[in-house]
Image (cartoon, rainbow, N blue to C red; front, top):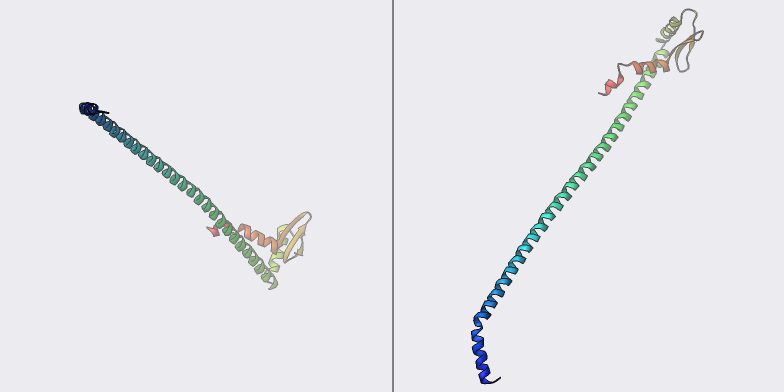
Length: 173
């Protein structure tokens, strides 16, 4: 380039300075606007992501609480069933022991001679004077007349005592 061209370029360059400054200013404004838009978009996306994370976390907590409640209810039901089974076993054991003691007491009274005559008389009286009274296996007496039978054995009396004892279930309440 020659000196005249360089001088012209300098003059042209100076005359285009306002256009160049305006274009540069507009480019900077556009860049700033795009940056602001991107920042707002990023902020919205971040806020949405945080809100979604909060919803997911709350849903997970809620699901966890519901799962824990179901597990706790199932465990509580299992514990109640196990406790009830233990209670029933203890009640059965006590009932059986009471039955054994009743039978032992009846046998002791029979062995001492205090109960035998009364049981034999009771069995005979139930069927009348023609009844045949016999000793029962395990203690006590049975009376027979024709097809009828009165059982005053220790086993029968114990069973009767256990079943007619003022609703023995009330003992457990």
